[in-house]
Image (cartoon, rainbow, N blue to C red):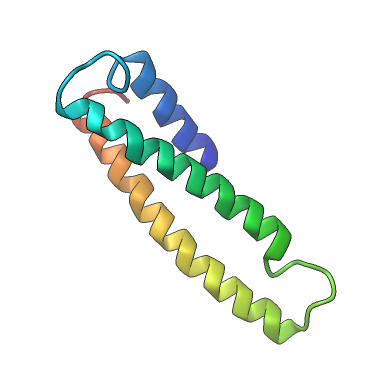
Length: 92
């Protein structure tokens, strides 16, 4: 997911959506950058505090897995929205 988000960011920047175009299209810059940071933090948290951390009980691992799955669904929904916006502007 991180790679897809970074590709969208690169394409938006290349096409001038983020930096060069005035008006409403520049409003997408902050949400996209925020989303990229959130996804990177999510990935780091999964690696450090996820269900595969050594020394936790199987019950705790399942609890953590469910929590991360819920967060992933949220981020996947946001990614799909950003992809739709990219298609709307003809960036993809």
